[in-house]
Image (cartoon, rainbow, N blue to C red):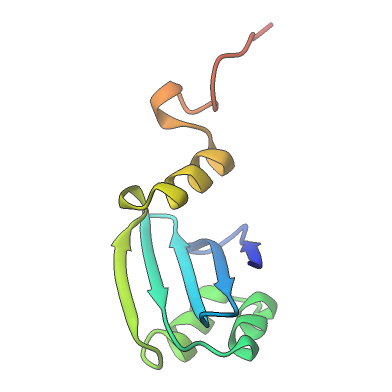
Length: 100
């Protein structure tokens, strides 16, 4: 499953399941949005967009069926967020470590 991490804007990372044509967008506020029936070409354009959040608003949000969920309610998404940003339950650093 292709994944893309974005470094600016409100979308933090996205996953695309080509077999299911499902696009998963993870936002900086913790929101997880799932869109169904999204063609591969739309995923490719999202990844190449100069402003992915604007592309999402203009070309995806109103065009494709959505299923909303919070990232914390989906264990796989929680694990992905912890891997990217550290586990908030352990001080945000992803575990124990020595600071010298």
